[in-house]
Image (cartoon, rainbow, N blue to C red):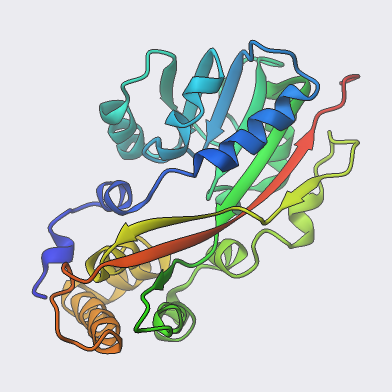
Length: 279
């Protein structure tokens, strides 16, 4: 394997290479929910914790203006480089202090991000930024599930490395998304929402990929990044090499990691709520 998974340097660059955009049918659920009480044309959507813009750009066909906000200057730089939409802009800012105008947005969205936020302060900021009847949507996905007709246990290998091999390096916040699926009480204490929250776990998406893609994705985990910072590149490379070998062995070990065609499934979960018309 050598160090080929380290050829893309920097967490922002690795993240943007191996992370996908959310599926369009998930975005359609959110947009349709907004439209139930907000007549089109829809004005502004804010993507908080936008990273490299994967979740920002998919909102652009549905809103007149989309703003991606992230505290990482490196991620914002990457997002601006990949942006081709005239109605999309990016800015450095925190989820708890976006710098956006009061009551200026019809949607505040957070994709695979709000487990890192200080939630009470984020809710306060989302409530400030949302216009009356605007929607807060928080969504994410669980551990990737690689599938192949001849190897039904590939998902078990992924879980092993998250729950066992890297368990001492997994931040508690990460567990809230990959294992908890935003079911903790703190994700439901949203002060500006009067109607019952909507929870949906019916969406999934499958991408074609390879063993190399799965290993590359694991290299983006915060648990792996913590391991690399503490233990160095040599041991980190050995972890990925071991993971790659377990996957290829489960597939019969006859092909290079780049040559085995897999389907990689991501199961999504979504929480949505609407700001009161009176606020």
